[in-house]
Length: 111
Length: 119
Image (cartoon, rainbow over all chains, first blue to last red; front, side):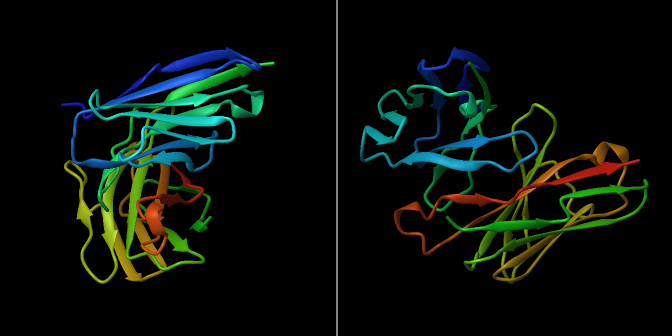
């Protein structure tokens, strides 16, 4: 049973466009919903995260939207830049528990 | 943000040898560290949870006698791949949580990874 489903698998966006990545989960015990960014040959780094008590969080060009009833959360990257080209992972976790990583989305932003 | 280091960053070894990878939290104490393995173009696969002062908790299918984990202090966890074989070649990544990080106590700070190649 796959607990976390991430889509799309890959995404190509023009510079200045909006990139949208989705994550659906099944475990209702999850209470921390982060997105991690990973560049080739590097470890992942936290991009943005949300708790279930809010429906949206914005940090600069990055917005995370959370829909508790649908058990989904998404990452929106506004004004996408070539430097945003990376692999993105959702990795929800329960309170102080281990994360469950999605399969990842490879984003390519074309200049 | 908090810093986690890994050493070595890259290692090439012969089949049958053992390799030790160190994971350090440089500016915070981590009671829990995680070890992941990542194959090319795949997601991170959790291998084990390392708890300071106690035995590691291994995920299903991960051989505890092959992947030895020691978390001897609040800033250091080690992963030893014993009798390594070519199929163990992978990118090994550790992460640590900072329990004093306020509302982001769940946030995992990842190390830069260790590329293991077994010939």
